[in-house]
Length: 392
Image 1 (cartoon, one colour):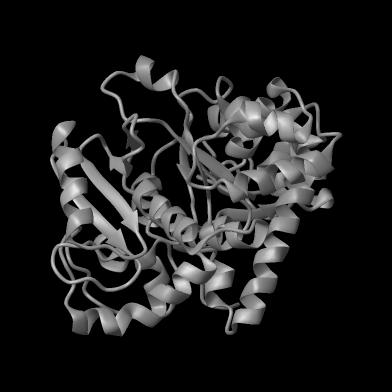
Image 2 (cartoon, helix red, strand yellow):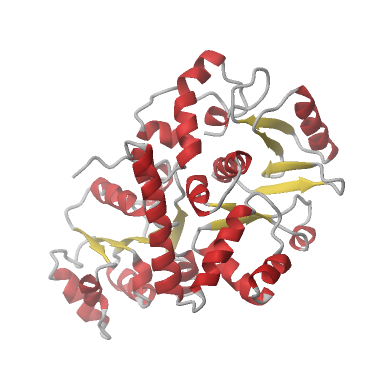
């Protein structure tokens, strides 16, 4: 078996190996959930453990019993004992709708420690919300951060503190990696692919897999061609305000239908919305939100986008890993692309100068933010934030 590279989220999950709660890992398809689950499997210091892939219909038969004691018997036939501390690793649990009640039963009666993965939070959060209340911890896995990307590339460098400028010498060392990351995104298998042609083919296959398994199989939507067109329209508008009424008019679909589709696309981790900056949640809810995709490499394969949109979507991802995001826009149209945790402003520019920097700092000061940075694709001296390090 090939070496499984650890993800940063393992540092958090590892704290709960001995807790009684089930560990649930969710995220978009191909973000590395199965590899992470196998990595944890190897780290658990016990022989009384079992890894099962529920995407396999034959494996699902083990759990298709009305009498849950028969499920216990089926599992023990697979080589584990539920009479002692047992660790069960179940991959792709969204394929088994009754799994929450089974997990609850085995936790309550046999103190089984579960590690579960699923690609569709739409199903996980609805199925798991009440039946496993107090019995689970949910972790969301996203494409690689730039720091993880460098680790996967076996580039070992000390990362400067967030917001600190990078020297030109250091930048020249990492620039080829940054450009690759910016071009193809952070899906692990894409990062590890050896040539651009293969990376592009993998990105196309990832979207095909998402569309077939999430939209066509799990969601069972009827108008899949219109959903495809809706996704393409969202991609073309990445980084912009979502105008559902205009989209409904273009696609000749009701506003309510598009809102349902958008909810599903968000819940299955393809896209995300960020609200406007506001000191009160009620004020933010009433205003339009901006749309971003889970991965900018994937975004580039779905729609025709500009290099600026690609960069902004990449920075969205890096910042999203660090906290809550919002945006700020004045009536004049002047804006701040991202505000992190209601404290720090980040304005994204392909190229920028002192006037851009001064404007961002002035806007941030107007609304009471603690600090402000510019993020640029190319190296810029001074206080401009270099994404690979300051946001890694």
